[in-house]
Length: 473
Ligand code: NAD
Image (tube, rainbow, N blue to C red; front, side):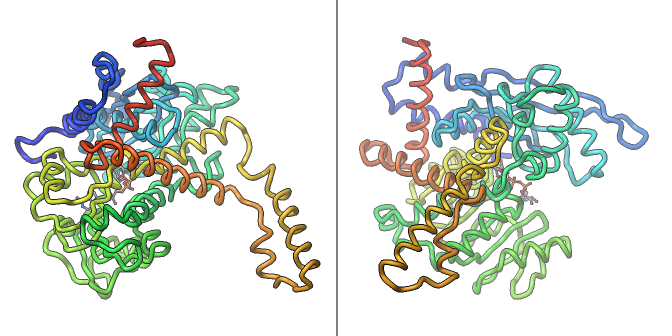
């Protein structure tokens, strides 16, 4: 929850929208159309848990139909409410536009704490929720395509896909009704790491941006930079691991549900994750000390803070104590609008959610394309590329008379697999979107923060979609 007298999550998103919209010359009516949530389906359905029936509250919000299908994750959390789902759906619209994923934004939520249910019960709830979506025409490869979010993963997506095919047997593109599926069930390699990997690429772009680094007194580059992470779930784990392995960054603090740990020497994320799976907790991980409250991770002295849990974590009441130079919004909406004002005044760089965690929807888009094409990426060109590279290397060997080693040869003469293409497409997407954001900031003196610039990029793209449709001439 936001602190008392602070705007709700949805209000914060709307406030950020308004700040950016005021800096555009777009027609007022068009901006009003983009801003509002188009459809919200609130449902209540009974599920038999043990011997009793429980009434489950759930939502699916479609923020914008300017492009179809709409797209966005499904969240399982006791805190789910309509305001939150609408905020998350809005963010999806702007996120998709920013990274050129041709979808409108949506989001779903089921108000349950997954920890309190058995796997069988979760399956029942997921299948029933999917049935409700089918009944109201709120799911389908050309209608609305869910994906994982907080509290859900590939397992839930497999149940959704299976339920959909039960009702829609014979629909040739049925696999595109949901993304984030297991690879064995029409999923794509690299989807589970995608959001975290995108978070790393985004952080890397910012840390290599000299003018921004000069402004906060940091050298450029990722190596050696200190990091604190809140939430070691899908996004936090992959982001932390890739920052550590590929970016050579040092993770000095991690917070999870059960508490927070700290180590000046650095925490090995892979080992920590295995430790948590084994013991059920991050506490007492060798070489770390325990912080007195889990929220203290947010306040440690570090270069980059990665909130990767939930919204409204950086608020009016703790913003002044945040010492990180860069806040990397891996979660959606971790910073309230009031906290943002305080942090920007202090000179903190905020890498906005709508950009930073767009890796998930980007690779979901690749998965959807794979499902519609009914073919794995790389299948057509891999061998052709390998043979071509091999011929080039052989020719160089012949002309120079110098043999290339076997290991080098196989490294050079390698065609791309699906995972290589997915990572390449993701990196390209994150780099290009960052360039677009920075171009707006360089051209428009009044745009001084990354979030406002990201909103402007997104608004311009959505507006031209509407204008091309002949709406709002
Ligand atoms: P997840 O459920 O896999 O992990 C979240 C983790 O945060 C859990 O382990 C939970 O115990 C922990 N947590 C919750 N409250 C906490 C607190 N107060 N302090 C410390 N830890 C806490 O969820 P996820 O998929 O990693 O999503 C995290 C965030 O990233 C959400 O805001 C989500 O909307 C956003 N996001 C996720 C994806 C995706 O592909 N999964 C894509 C884009 C954005």
